[in-house]
Amino acid sequence: MNRDIMDKSDLAHYVAFRMGPQIYALPLRQVERTVRMVAVSHVPDSPPWLLGVLDLQGRIIPVVSIRQRFNHPARDPHPDDHLLIVTAHGHHAAIVVEQVTEVLKIPAAAVKCPEEIMESTANLAGIISKEDGLILILDAEHLLGFLKTSAPPNVFREAGLNCETA
Image (cartoon, rainbow, N blue to C red; front, side, top):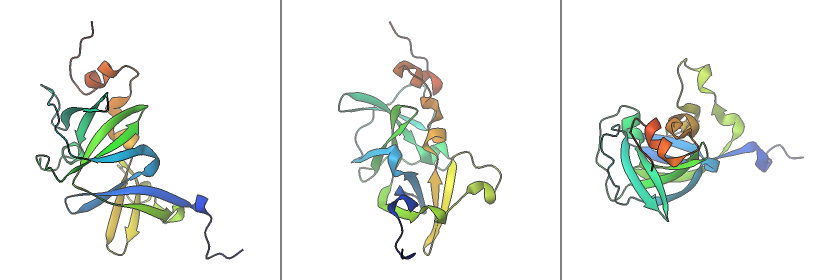
């Protein structure tokens, strides 16, 4: 067998996106789809990184600013922004991104383990080095840890909101 031809199972697939000058990525299996930015309903007394909720084809899902989740300066959503609809802990969330750049097909061996480089890497699942810079692979399960619940009202309680059900 020719070693230059790689088996498809050796490839890792990621959705790459831009936040400021940095390119990030999420595993393709965690991304349901991308949609253009839409109006978001603000939720009173929510954490700054929880921009609100939106109705996506009958599903009410939280909208998260990873910019603010990572303690970067706040930026109002722009009509040119996109939402990555992500699945974590059996629930959906929308992550605001400035631009979806590409779907990457990377040899799994090219993804560096962050623990090899630094100690604290809670949101980071891997690092890809490319000619034009580094791509930071995020861990959606950790990033959206507030979704660890089985009942939708608890999503908001986990995010620090009071949500009473009748």
